[in-house]
Amino acid sequence: MKKVVLLLIALILIPLFSLSQNLEKLDYISPVHNGLVAIKKDGQWAFIDTQGDLVVDFRTDLVLTTFGKINYPIFESNRCLITQNKDGIPYYGYIDKTGKTVIAPQFLNAMPFNNNTAIALELVKVDLGENEILNKKVYRYKYFEVTIDPTGQIKTYLTDAVYIGLTPSNLLKAP
Image 1 (cartoon, rainbow, N blue to C red):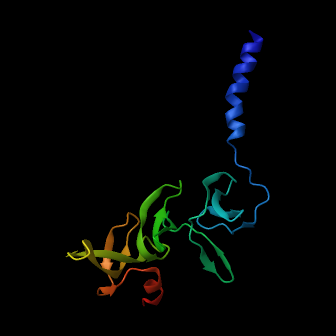
Image 2: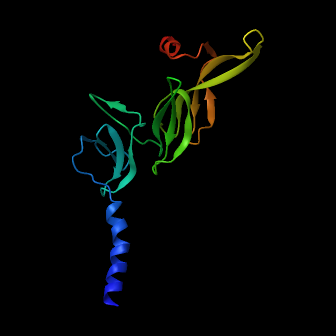
Image 3: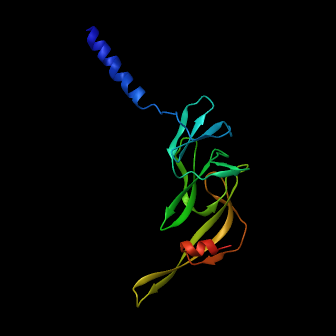
């Protein structure tokens, strides 16, 4: 009976120890920002709380914010910027403090939140019809500079539409 109890205890404790995150040999530890510390290891970033508990696991899609001569990801208004490439074009969104994507990458550019507001470039795809010779759909893209709230809802349009050809090289030329 004693062996069975010890075996059960061991089976319960093994997953707890095997799932713990090794926070040794870190490349960078940021200052505390809004109760969290960004940590870098092997080119990936994560967040720990002030007790040292991992709250957002290591990932490669976090966007860095510049503070003087140093760069690291931050949470503002409980949101952290992420990026995702689609066909060579970076789109920006946000995660919450659990690492869950709460605003899917959909903006051509975005800033960290400040007082529950962020500035972003909203992309709008306009269907112009079909090219009958090539049998392909024809689209036109435009974007607006907007302010958004922490749910991703647009609060204000800051600019009129800017029309672009949506290719990675054109995005580099866009104002």
